[in-house]
Image 1 (cartoon, rainbow over the protein chains, first blue to last red):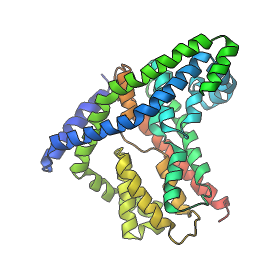
Image 2: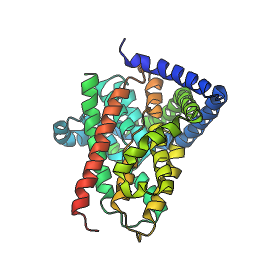
Image 3: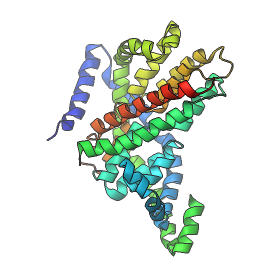
Image 4: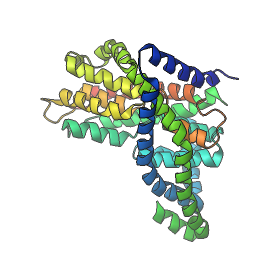
Length: 172
Length: 183
């Protein structure tokens, strides 16, 4: 068994003991948090139905193959699997869209495959950039965002390359 | 997306497959949500226990010196610093609902008196928030568990490495661009 197998049980035990030592009603806090998890789920389900439908249709039409083939040389240079091409474009724009594309990749190639793992790490290490930029600058009343978007996109590109790299380092 | 797939399916002779894929996709979305519900709720619960135990505050205290270096001007104002460190630690724990209001409060204070133009520090704060620094990506782990991954959380070290590299790249890019970009 590898070390990451220890992570979940240890984290669960640590949180429970730490909470109790601080006099927290652990069970109550847990159920309250779980309830929040459920509201998150309810919020992502409706867009996911629409988006997964579209993603499955797109895949079935066969259009992904020529697009991936077109981008393959560039992506190969960056060490990114061409299968994840669609994820790269949708990730900064739509969170639920990225979840739909990523889940479809994990389902099609298997969650423990190279492509499936890269998709998961990409989802886990990047954010919905344009949404976040809009929320923060919108709330702060800033219209001249200067270099924030190019810098944030640089972080995304680095995240994609790093995701493929990290999966190769740790698994393959 | 739908129009493109129907059009291409027509040309490619796969329009029948496109139709059945639509039904499959809709069903898969609900199936996925149902089967990841347990993992997602469990981790949300876990994070809420950590939050209630004061871990968020402890992390916030830990971040203050770091923020003093990263955003020196904003950190001089104690209220902004409190919001910033809360934003960072909530992000780390994946408490998106807590992180965003705190980050917005900090951003509003930092943007005050700048006449609608983003300062270098505000750009850096936004870049920090657009790069995910979440320690435990519960949603992704939930999807992996739902699809029958052997160990849904075995991607964590890879996620951390990728996150660190991505944040570093974002901050480096901000630093480089700040020298060329006109005010």
